[in-house]
Image (spheres, rainbow, N blue to C red):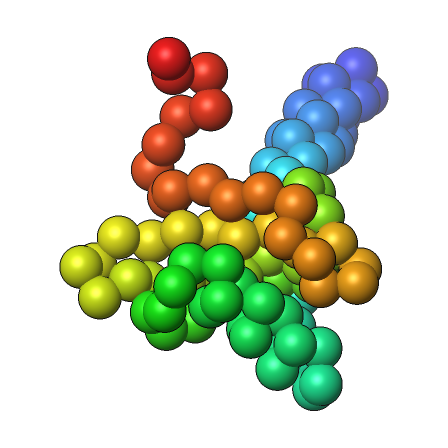
Length: 102
């Protein structure tokens, strides 16, 4: 009986760890794209801010603002433009740049 309890405990521990990993990994891909008229307004604001390019990715409910629009410039650089709920630019960030770098 003692062996059964130990084995059952190990199985439950492995299952809990696997579930935690699955939940943690899933959090990275839970980005909600911008849709409808909000997409048009966010894209227009981001492209005006960057001076052109093309919108390659969007996210509603971004941690830096209400919206994030990724713009790929003609030279290949990517800029994430952060917008508030009124579609005003509140910041931008070049992809691949560490915020802690000087």
